[in-house]
Length: 88
Image (cartoon, rainbow, N blue to C red; front, side):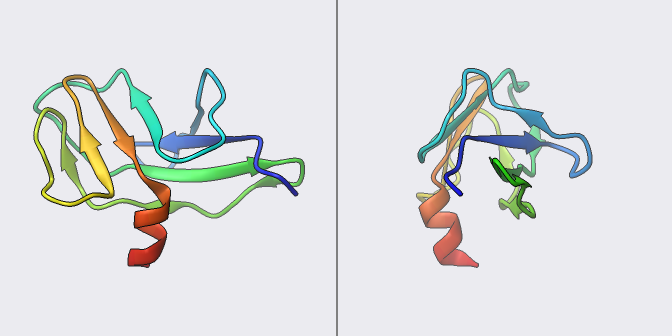
């Protein structure tokens, strides 16, 4: 079934659907605190429910991780799912 949205979590337990809906990479996750380190957990959502989560490497908001799978801004991150999937 086609992906209709993604959800994310910063604790691995409580997932929030992206709003507005995002269906392609990179995903933008906003509303994070600057200078805070997060591990982002992402699930794909479709008509059948949610997938198991993809776990990113920890990133500190407002810094550059030095890779191309996550780009950090002042209060959010952009996650390139294709790069993360290649790392798994």
